[in-house]
Image (tube, rainbow, N blue to C red; front, side):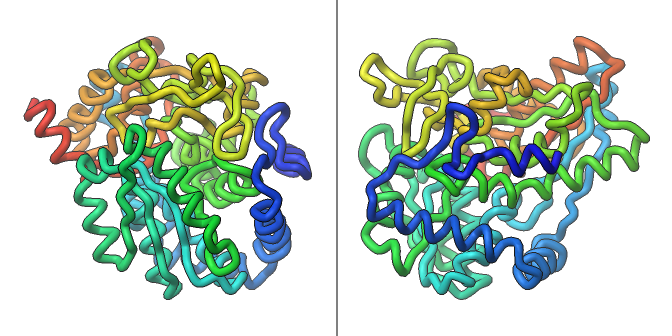
Length: 398
């Protein structure tokens, strides 16, 4: 395992044929400073000690692994949930946001800038900014602002400036464009805290490394509970941060099958889904190479998902490499199956999942029905408070 993380990415930020950094020279100089600082500061005793203290006393880590008995009995298998919904702010996003903000403090930065889709990353970064006494600016598409109103309110209460993005599809891809443009205006005093394992090097590496805590905890917890490792590990994939967090602990275990669940949305037609690895091909977006849903000219295609945190036309470069290596199986779940899982977990276990996480729950149900003898570990990446008004308005009570 140690050799893998020392090998990927390489010194240029490449994961095989993917990743890298393709940005203007002025910005590259700032990226190089962040990279150098990350390698030196994040490995220091002081940084590690402070981050561990934050995780334990502020975030409430470790989050538990929970056996979903009623859901398992219903499906015929054994489904376990890594409860990242119980992480402070209600999702896995705070794991890397506190790390990024702590790094910003060590670098003497004054302002955190980021995009958000479902609002979970925005809330987490606003929380980190409040903790460290930093300014915070969050860019969010107008479509997502309307869908995720509770998270917008939370960000503003925490002191963040929420910038509505009104161009293009007004969702996550455009929010990234807008946030990057804002960061370019003052890269000296601000730092761009990307919300997933995407973007130019070193962002995919940094976010993965900060999210590895999920897999480290889950591996130990699952083994303590069962005396063995899971047969299957399942996580939703948009950009792919929560998935990389839990997959990282099992990349060397050939017997453990890893499943990344993409959003099939309304169906296979272009613009009706965000199943990037399923339908995409290698391309470039936001300064890095990855699988990309794109048109004939290489421009990003329109995307859609019921889950605002998953509707991104690209995907993390490490996921792109892991797909090509056959290490991870990338599958998909549509809106209707996602909503069914949202309600079923709520009614059977008393846990309201985020719509993003419900994609993973839905696929875990499929696996359990196919082979009841297998054990399945799901990364429940977030809670569904942010989604309840939207779900009830669109689907009603079931």
